[in-house]
Length: 420
Ligand code: FIX
Ligand code: ZN
Image 1 (tube, helix red, strand yellow):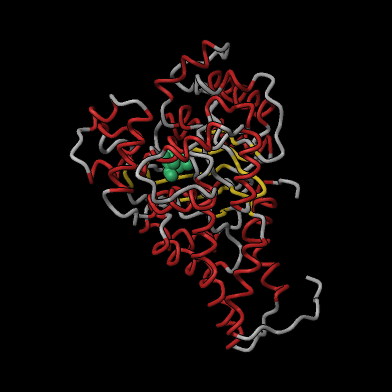
Image 2 (spheres, helix red, strand yellow):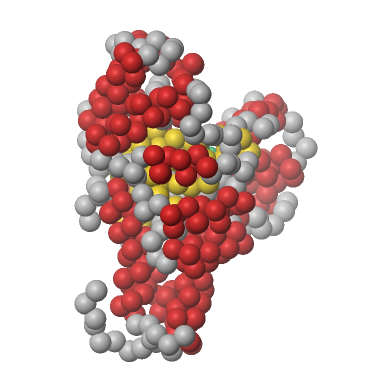
């Protein structure tokens, strides 16, 4: 790193310099459920989607005695009105998810204390998606968002025909339906002309490889991804393990992209509340250990859903350079837990990890999720630099800028082979 002679920062002004440099860093959001404009038909944006986010639906069911089936019978607008009244008018929006909506409204200069959503709905009536995306990304301080793209999603797949690349978005080939739900989906591949059967025979494996290659050519994904249940094991005697070993990992090597392992979901612990009904469980990370050791030519992004798995993920990341921990996922994306996870990652991994992703499902969520990340991370980073200064090594603004660029851009770009 070329040494620029700079003022050595005192402990007092470390926090303000870290905050300034965090605000100036254009972040790459490496996992979202957002979509480029040409896939806009499946993308979510606007006040009614923001207020009916599944995190808020879960909180509604705790604060109102409405039965889920009655809620599901309401229109999207009626659902949003009920959530707004219950979680924002009758009660203070003090949770992470409700406060996030307030932060978005403030950032968009919309009323945050309204008795209803009429002002916000009037604002959105005048917005066009592409211009709004640019404004929201600027407010969030992100330069790009990485999507989640499922070739077996009947709503999304047809939209990829003639869908042009977009400079603000990267694609990801999402494989839950192939790896986690093969029995329910192999016939979809067959219907598309891939000569597969339910048993993963060598011929079926070859056709799954062809399916993956065809979609890699269409999407040009920066990585492949799968969300795996908390009981994921590898090796194991299962179709999932065989498809992973014989089709997905070779395809990742063929296209030189990582596989993102998101492990720990306990699907539909309460089906009555639909997308809000997923839970979390501690995983056995020997699966990750075995994958990293047995496939050194593969690279693995990893984000785990259980707080109890985080420290051992740091230990494994010290053992395997082909393992990149990322984000404080889903139920972990709360300041109290982000602080613990980020501090132990810095202590054990230096700046060789990817601290956060937004997981945004609704476009405007990136505004609050990245405001929270910057607010939570500034004192953590300043503390790390204060300790370094105390122990004898002065820190400059250039050092901080270099580290933030690694954390929020270069580690992803290098690990996924994405150009700057
Ligand atoms: O599997 C995933 O990508 C999860 O992030 C989502 O399914 C989850 O619902 C979510 O949006 C969490 O924030
Ligand atoms: Zn996600």
